[in-house]
Amino acid sequence: MSVLVSNLQEEVAVDDSLVDFLTLAVQAVLKDEGYGEEAEVSLVFVDDARIQGLNEQYRGMDSPTDVLSFAMLEGESVPGEEEEVILGDVVISLQTAGRQAREFGHSFRREAAYLTVHGVLHLLGYDHQGEEDRQSMRQKEEEILTHLSLPR
Image (cartoon, rainbow, N blue to C red; front, side):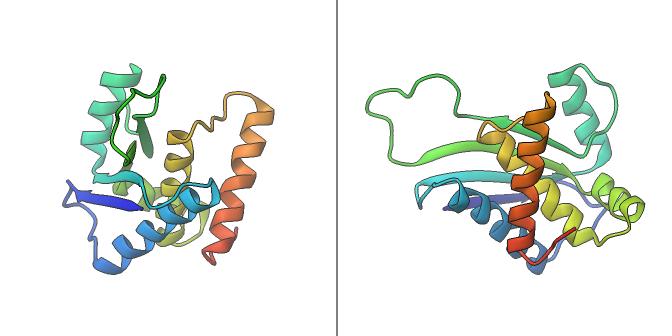
């Protein structure tokens, strides 16, 4: 499983330990969902200003948000495609993650992992529009975070 990480912000320090841990979080989701070594996800760290611009451009909402997912797996596959499955991009505002961690009373590491897991599940088709879907997604998130030793 390939996890490509890009840090496009300077507001929150990002060290190798955080990158390695969030890479493990992505891999845990993919493994749990039955993906093998062929899967690729891009994880992008941004600040509030950049995610606000993306949120307005793609969702019509002129405000920062915590995580956006841009799935590549839509429609039917094209015959002759490469073996690698590029699932898409998960964009996380580390500024918002820090604020939310303080508001919820848990660590920044847990919040960043939660947003990573949440974003990857969106890439794989999970949603939280209806109550049943929301509960299913929340349960999956908590199972994976518990496996990563980050229970609620």
